[in-house]
Length: 354
Image (cartoon, rainbow, N blue to C red):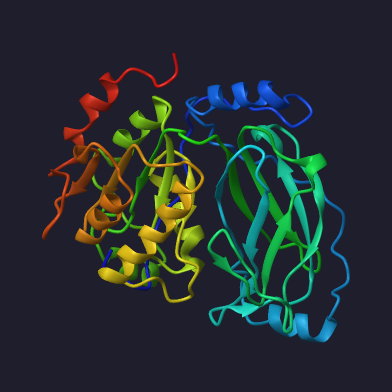
């Protein structure tokens, strides 16, 4: 990924039905068995139902917050996560406005969940965005800072195995952002893909398309190939060094072209994680956090030597499961000229679940 300011990843399409359970439904050994079984079931696209809510509430800091909001359109972004059953479940998001990314500080945010990708929203609680003087901890690799939310789901409301959509709504103006939380056990099969140049039509096309207000094209066969893997039970993750404020455009790109829905991670920086060695360092760190949850990708897709370095460090095995689209430079893995080369093999695979 060459472009420091522009990285990509996200959700889309539809793959199969969801069948996870809340904490009240499964506990102990039953939950472990359910979690293991669900680990290889294709995850749902999780389309969001309408959210009925009351009117907006007064700002806690009327003058300052109105100035923040006046900076421009909301650029809020939620952080998708893989979470192991039984581990703390923290919802992470950033709230900011305008091209200057003006932070919304010390204001109320309501937290809702579409449990099990069901048909209704459930309110989990209300939290505050961080502000000046707040302790800035690091959670799930995300450094604290102004405008952040780190909402820990109470134990009595923990999310069971499977996929869940979370929506965070600013009480003062009703603006919102969504994220996906996938509760999966260690050894869950999943694949990981870079975006720029790997899935977009060229390495730097996002810069041009951003200025034009359009979304990039994709490579022929790429959505079909990744959908074929997802249909066999591999959960998707899209990892890019893009800046955090491009999360929604990444999701829109993936949705437009029919890529399977999954966890999307950009860098958490406003300028991105760079390219070359710095991109490899960022991705290696992300993959190391996943490894601590017992999650190692079964496949990795990229187009740059930095992707190869990250996948080798993460022990994506066998090496030919590291797939690189028209890569130049040193790499260890399998080079492809077209995603159509992959489709027959992926379609012929047996489902992971038996």
